[in-house]
Amino acid sequence: MPAKKIVCLGAGSRYFLGALPDILVCEPLAESEITLYDIDQDKVRLLQAQATLWADAAGTGMQVRACDDLADAVDGADFAVSSIGGSGVSGRGIASTSFHMHDIVIPAQYGIYQIVGDTAGPAGMMMALRSIPAYITICREMERRCPEVIFLQHSNPMAAVCRAVSKYTSITIVGICHGVQNGIRSLAQLLATEPEELEVVWIGTNHYHWFTSIRHQGRDVYDAVRRLLAERGAPSGGIMTQKLSDIYGYQIVYPHDDHIIEFYPFLAQVRSEAEMPYGLSLRLGGFTLEEARRALSVQMSDEEHRSQRQADLGDYAHDLAGVTLPPAPTSPLRGEGLGQLISSIAAGSRNVFIVNVPNQGAVINLPAYAILELEGVTDSTGVRPIVVGEAPMPLMGLLQKRIAWQEMVVDAAVKGDRGLALQALLLDEMAIPPEKAEAMLDQLLQASRPMLPAFFA
Image 1: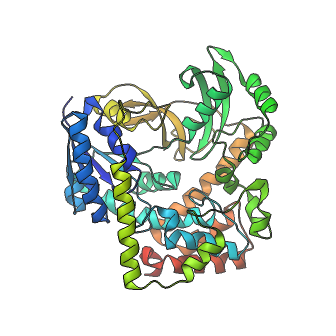
Image 2: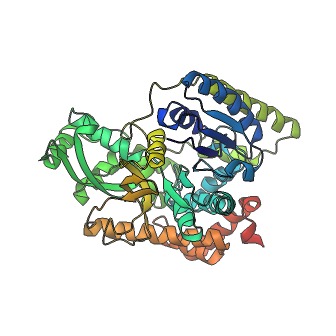
Image 3: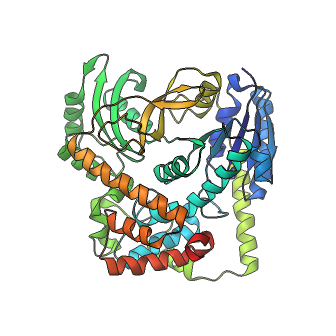
């Protein structure tokens, strides 16, 4: 197979500490060129130095090159892989940035207590509003310099970012996540079998999906799963998801309460952080809500900023040095299967992966344009979704609303439209009265103003 050019965008993200080694050990991609680009050039240089050592150890003849120019990084690329948080240069991740802290702290003033805030709720919307313009800018450059590129996107909010690219650009984008894989492995553990032995069907969008069929060696085992779950009892951190699964009649795939609860109104119904349901608590990037408030109230000196920056870079270099190459690329059911996904598309091989792509009729009673997390088959043009069938009525209702929210958020981000952003807040499950929602939106936009020029033009 001819060598390919693979560009890593947002290369300073810690995601690439696992993703890049997964590519480097992939024999079918031997002799490929990997370019690294990030607005944080310090991390790019650190990564390039370490990745060169990884490449030598992998023995696949790949070359790793750091780029300080986006055009150079993407020029002629066959594949792009992104992990872009939309919060500027960050230390240990998005959750520790002032932008995301404001996403959590401001809604809490209005009685909305978010936990993760990367896919739904006011925080999920704000992440999209900041991220999507950056993605559109990158895609415009790729339209000029590598129009046939396959763009593999890892960042949250996954569905909104992928929908923005597919709606407003000509670039082929495929979202990659590991939530469904985690759910399948949980089922396999429950059934004392291997994930590869299970035949499962699920319906949903990123972080929000349900198993509609579970089979093992040709037998329907859904009743056995229900019985085993009832015998085991709901685990800590999964009390709400198990209760909802019992009510729906379909097991929630991603069984973590802290993620799933943000798709429901429950967090806008508590009176204080102390009353969080299901034993949940706010731990924003390692901070409590009060610690986040204090951190935002402190004005750091230039010297303190420099000191913190050096500490962050030191932590990053330490993490880089601790990475070991895997013996082989990750299996698609044991992770995201990034190396195998790229090599399958590059070779035009027909293999099945779990991806976030436009529905295109795979779930016939949901919009064709909606970004759903589905099984898809690879070929040289990317990934085509495999038909699932109809979403059961309760799941269809839940998903239709989420898909509409994603569409309004996407349009608001691209157009800088406050009205659409307000409509999205009011459609979201964690909605509050419109007067309060409008005041909250003004505060949220102001807090992210440096990242939102379209809203202040």
